[in-house]
Length: 80
Image (cartoon, rainbow, N blue to C red; front, side, top):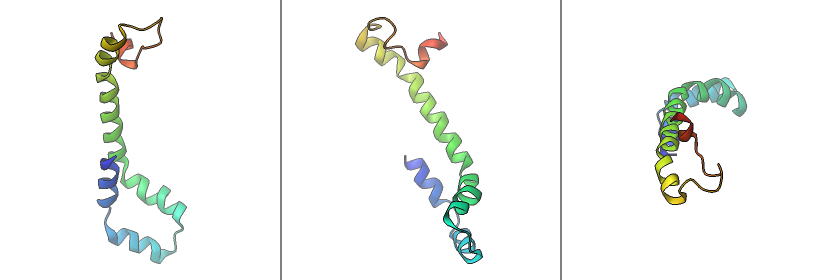
C-alpha cells in the first residue's frame, strides 16, 4: 500500500541515525520506534480497507444473485 510507504518516509532520518548510533538492533528498532510512530498510518489503512469491504456488497450480490446458500455473503451483509 502506498500509505505504508509514505508513513515510513515521514519518519525523520535523524531518528534512524540516532537509533543506529545507540546500537539498537533491527528488531528493537521496529518494535520500539517504527511501529509506534506509524500507528496512525495503520489506523488509516484499517479504516480504508474496512470501507472497501463494505462497498463490495453490491458487486457480489449483483454478480451471483446471492449464490448457492450462504457462500457469497460478505461482512457488509451482516450490517443489514
